[in-house]
Length: 334
Figure 1 (cartoon, rainbow, N blue to C red):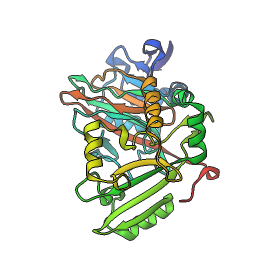
Figure 2 (tube, rainbow, N blue to C red):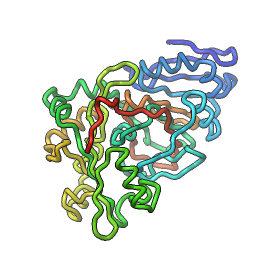
Figure 3 (tube, one colour):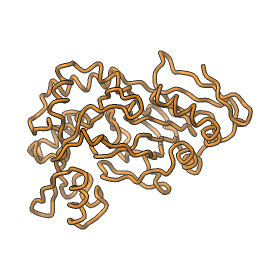
C-alpha cells in the first residue's frame, strides 16, 4: 500500500483482489478534500502509478462535472474535442461527454479509445454521476497482457499486414459522416481525410465509404513496451451479438457494412482468429462496481475498456486528453 497526502490526511492506495485493474486511490473521509486537490498535490506520483498500473480509481472524494473538469486540467491539461466519431454521445459541459449512448441492454466490447485514428487520447477520464442499480461496470483489460496472450503467429500476421477499418456511412444507419467529421462540406471531409491517412470513396446518394490502414501493435510512449492497440476486434462485425450481426448481414454485403475490419491488404480476417482475439480480451478483463462520485483515470495505451449491460439510470461522464500519435517511422499511407 502506498500513501499520498491531501490536506494533511493520508489517502490510501490499494489494489483490487488479485491485483486487478484499477489501483484504488481512496479517501476515507470527505475531509481529505476534493479529487483535484489530491491530483495537484501528488501529480508526479499519480502519473507514475498510472503508467505502472494502467488505471486509477479515485474514490471517496466529492465530485461532479465541475470537479471532473478540474481533475482533467490538473492531471492532463485541456480536454480534447471528440472527433472522427464512431458512436453517439451527448455533450455535458465543454469537452466532457456522456459515455456511449447505447441501450442499457447492450454490452460494449473492450477497446482502446480512437485506436483507429491517426492520433488518439493517451489518458481517459470516466466519472460516475449516477450509479446503476446492477452491473454496468466499465471493465478494464491490460493490453500488454492481451499482446502476450495472442498466439505468436497471429501477432506476427497483424504486425506484417496491419489492419484495415472500412466504414460505410449510410442514411439512417449508424453515425452519419456529417456527425463523424463535424461538417456537411465534402471538401472539408476530403481535406481532413488526406491529412489523417483516410481513403475516401463517395457513393451515389451522398454516401461515403472510408478505408483506413493502421498498425495493430504500438510501442507505449512512456515505457516503450509493445502493446496490442487497435479496433480490429471491436469493429469486426463478428464481435456483435448474433442478432445484430445477422441483421446487418441480411441488409448489407460485408463490403457495405457500417463498420468492418480486415487485414491491412483488404483480405478478410478468419473467424477463428477473431474468436481467439475476443477470448484474449475477455481473459484479461477485470471489473469493479461504480459508486457515485468515482473518477476513473485510464492510460489508453495500457488498458482497454468496455461496458457491461445494466439496470437503472447509469450516467457516466467521459473526457479525453493528451493526444498521442503513430511515430513518423510507423505511419502508413493509404
